[in-house]
Amino acid sequence: MNDELQDLFDDANGELAIGDLEAAVAKYRRCVELDPDFFDGWHALAMALMKTGHIKEAIGAGLKATTLQPNDLLAWTALSQMYVQDGQIGEAEDAKGKARILSLGGRIVRD
Image 1 (cartoon, rainbow, N blue to C red):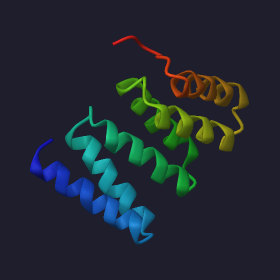
Image 2 (tube, helix red, strand yellow; image 1 turned 120 degrees about the horizontal axis):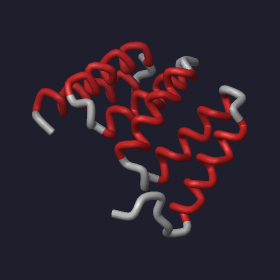
Image 3 (cartoon, one colour; image 1 turned 180 degrees about the vertical axis):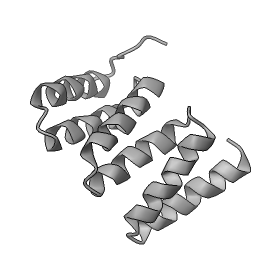
Image 4 (cartoon, rainbow, N blue to C red; image 1 turned 180 degrees about the horizontal axis):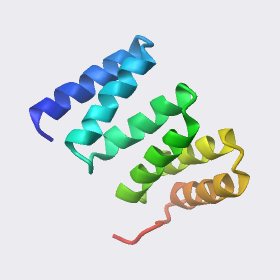
């Protein structure tokens, strides 16, 4: 990760910490624009979007995170929560199931 991206991500985390969710979302968006394969940026963007009530967009960012790191337990758990908030119970159960597999030491995708 380059210094510009790291600084921007740190700034976004700072905005989140002080409760300025809209500023955090804007900075996380910029992070993933700079590096479309930045898992932490997508995951953080998804969580911030969920907290601001932008559930559909949060799901999209969460899906991108799980695509980039399909064996990340927290990404699947968060995606399940997003689906629940959107009323997509089947999708939520599927994501929860994947999180459960990972929590037991399994893999969604073999490395």
